[in-house]
Length: 305
Image (tube, one colour):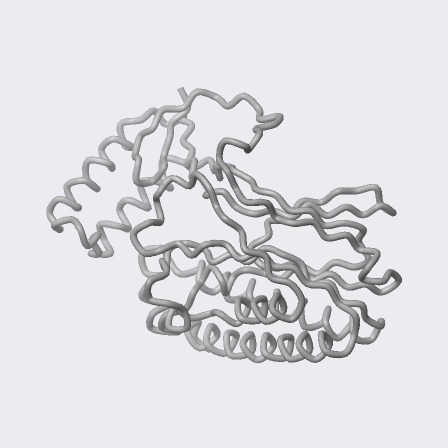
């Protein structure tokens, strides 16, 4: 089997399992006690992806409206199914929680579907990421035109009989060490691909890549290189489990699915996500970072000094 066929077959099964999960969720929300709160965030319009975010207004939906929005998001896997005005580069997030009071067998049905959905999502990501980065866009376009990879890779979170869920906001950077050879290979691959950013003449792009290769090549062999990619502010959920005396933090791009087996849904306390204001975010316990110098801005590539 080709990797293209593997991707298509895995994706078709993923769609089928998501559909089964959606139907089960709808069915159960009509038959058993449940609570649901999701927090709609403003859409990111095309061209505004890199704007500094000072504040975010949150709109809360509850009950069946919240379930409906959650189902809509987990089924949103193609660009063609969303508004053309909304940016394709920005993640669509719907933090929140859907809490269902259920019997053991129904929980097993839910959990089996969630495990399978997550397994298929991880397999799709593994297929795509084994394709060399310069060729990935064309591979996805030829296999599943318009696939929203962010939504497709995003796994579902399932929890049982927790005590409280509270919501907040997080600012952070994703920092990864890279080697000289890795950076040089990536730059050379960009030259070999023949692709060029739309806003640049091809000869300017090639000249820029050649200059970047010379810059990296001139560094000492033991240079410590890092990519420091700022991540836009994002919603998080903090889950408290009294029995384990443990708080766990989750990135909350999609609602958490919480199952009340021995508890009632009324016993599981659900907080609200407040509006975001940049000036109100406290930075706690941030370790002192080593001094770094920016080398290649478009790659967020730094060197330790």
